[in-house]
Image (tube, rainbow, N blue to C red; front, side, top):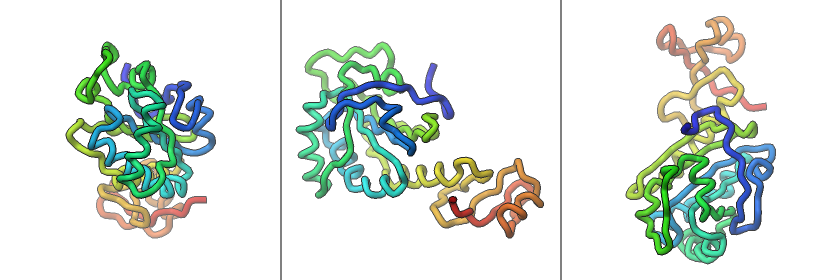
Length: 219
């Protein structure tokens, strides 16, 4: 069965470019993002992981760890990091997991379960492997995105989505289309008008079911 929002993210042990990890333990008390990609030493992936390297401080501000995954070896990851750092202009301070066994890719539906990748494979053999998972401190899947090989990921959107996940986590609000932090949010329909006003202050009633309020401050 495919993973769904609010499923427990599969746990796994993996060798990474920074040493061995046990995924659920590695997450700790914060959030985690898994970025899978087709293959090391490929052009789009190098630009993507260069973007991740540049954004590591932003992820750290959000108490979020990032993990790259591909079906290449940890040794290859360590060699490829040099290219990533050349493109990024900064260190690639995040681990990349060795998934040469396909265990992670299969557990996270990153490629067909029956996939067989012989020696000498090319990036085209793993075309389905370009997925993003945001995982909460409770180890539940909060968000999933999948891109084709020809489309590089928009990491500004991934940061925005992470902000929205964290802003709404445990709070009776939702974020509207194109929301960015600091903009108004939508009061949940589980609240009456009176409850929404008592909890969030002024309520901007656009429609009976569309009520905007100021983004609440996090504790």
